[in-house]
Image (cartoon, rainbow, N blue to C red; front, side, top):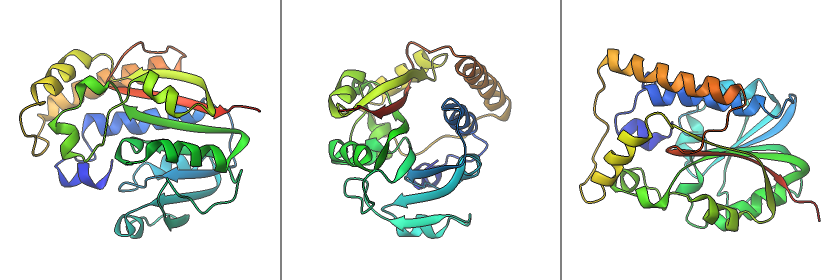
Length: 235
């Protein structure tokens, strides 16, 4: 969860947030390695870092928001830095993690190139981004997204990386979310509404089932979020 989402009314018990934390752990487990030097791009409010830290020998977090970095209390390295211009040496990290961050970066192509540069030859970039540019709406404007992503467009921006894993997420709820986003194309979206606790638990169970399917190896064919694991292409 990033600070904008929190300020807009999304709390830690929200079904989407809780299920996303599960998804992060599942995606990390797919590379079957621990004791890694990990770079996290975008710290948000820091609540996903606990799940990430168990995979790390050294954990480095960067963000453009110094206040957000100062709110992180875990024992890790924190740096104010733009992902489009990182000061790290070439091939510094085993894994780079970015969960719903690249859509906030104006020059995302440059950021992808920087990830390739600081990633070790057999390293991994694990990322999620909002899917389908056609669904860009006032919801994205509220969250300060520059874009949503089509896979083809993303592939063109990550030509120095090869896809080793691809799945969509939020598939079961895709239709209602899709209708909601299309409806909000021309209607200002101000904040998250409150969700009935019973409905929230039901939605979490649905998302939890999706996470179970992804954990078991099923790659979902569509959804509101695109999940990717990439590795550097060998020259």
